[in-house]
Amino acid sequence: MKYRLMILLFYSLSSYGFDKFDAAICDAGVDNPARVLCYRNAGAFSQCQNNDATAELSCYKDKINLAESEKKEACPTTTQGKCIAVGDAAYIAPNDYSSSAVKLPDKQQSAKEKPAVETDSLPPEIAKLESDMVVINGDCFMMGSGLDTKKIRMGDERQHKICVKDFEIGKYEVTQAQWRAVMGNNPSHFKGDNLPVEQVTYNYVQDFIKKLNTQTGKTYRLPTEAEWEYAARKDTTTAFYTGDCINTKQANYNGTYDYNNCGAKTGAYKQTTVAVGSYPANPWGLYDMAGNVWEWTCSVYDSSYGGSENQCESNNGAGMVHVVRGGSWLGNPIRLRSANRGRFSPDSRDSGLGFRLSRM
Image (cartoon, rainbow, N blue to C red; front, side, top):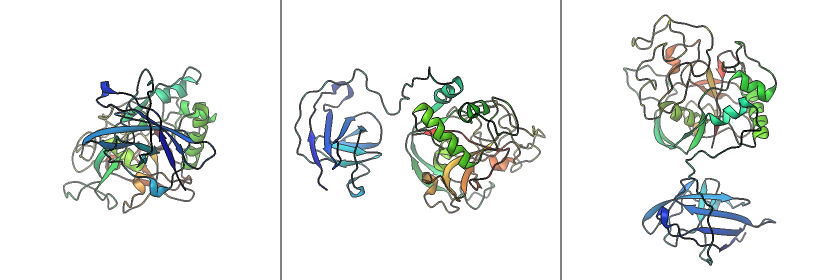
């Protein structure tokens, strides 16, 4: 298939340190040409190296359907950085272009800034879901736990380097009030509007997300396993984001058990979930990333970490075992470690099993 590019627009972005603005019309072989606006220094999907200066690239698209062979992870070029992005990839555009002046929007928004959302028409419980989404700046990190004999670890926690892109994640676990606002029911064993919803299967959570996205026009989902651990850790490399130990003033778990003789055994055991946000937040400002309820991820469990940890199961995981993270109110402290992996079939339900939302 032939692709014809005409770069139509030119603009000076001197205030951002770059001197070009490109808008492209791409004939992708569809009924309506795909209009793609790309501008540098907006920090989104890829990087474009232009005359030895690295420029971040953000691209917005309407319709495009390029072959996989034409997508590249980045677009190094010295020809004015002519790039077209497809999703989170980009390819170098041909040089058959022309330019003319264009007026930019009054305000440019970085991809790392949280976009404004109209929430006035939404139920307050759903509006709070939106306002509580936390922007997480992606990076590479060491996922899993090392072979340190001073620490207790499981056999499926192979430590390896993995990279995640920018994403958003809920500050809190989804509450029963929020679940009821979308689904009209409350399956939880422990009742309370501000308690985390539990007794929800993976498949039931997918139904919730579909209805929520229809109601809000957004693209909520569960976090991948890699996103979850990155969000739990931030810059920490210790067993817990609280350090190499944790106590029952920091998380809701079964405090009649210890971890590595570090003082996690305090005797406190609530034997119930607690209101979200009852304990101190982790370094990202996220609450209950350890304890309270296990949290579903969208990743299929692979004991050897073969790559599924960094992607969502595309078919709702029918029949596939999915990873859960974080431990719960009835669990031992060893299960609250940032690297610890739990797993359930998609139709499993439990009073210690809930979730939080994510979004790219």
